[in-house]
Image (tube, rainbow, N blue to C red; front, side, top):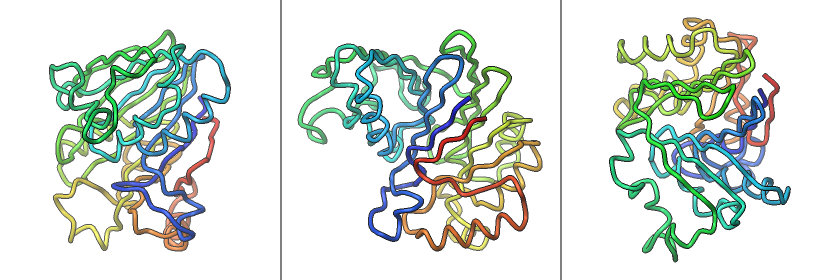
Length: 272
């Protein structure tokens, strides 16, 4: 299982020299496993992934699995270069609780006027939408199993668990800890994961002032890692105002408490 972080920022992209090392693009994770390509969320990081795939000039088949439809997680859709090619086939998996029963009206809100000059129908790629219910399991391709778990967030949002080739990845952003039922559900979903990717928008010290915002802390990520038995923890969804130096300091603090936890940087690739 090969995992590449194309976007690790939360809420809104961050630009400038202070954000160069960790990156400013919002959430987008590429997972290559069992000969398939899965893309977790379509934040602004999707643009750079699309440029890489477009340069390969080969037919593209991929599964895009969305945790939820907040803007920072779908804003990359209009700028995904393979959508503008007729040899691209993309199946988008989105939670029924957020996408509803229409033909992706909410999902493609960023791909039609007045937010974009043209609508989805102008794209030459073949794009289909498949709905899942939070808590459901499905097999997007042979040898790949995906399960989902409802998270505690403002609006429908799901953790995405990918299992293939004897490896397990749990992607959980965005989640506000503190609800016992939701926290237990997430710990069970992440049980024994080889890689846990978790929401670290705040610190424990900051979090009380932001209760109700739907996000968590890096310290809670460490607690979830211990509780679930996950082997490696990647902390993501960095606050858009959190600079490289500030993330370095948090990374040092995390390393003192756990050997197998780190703050993810845009462009990092891991072999799980």
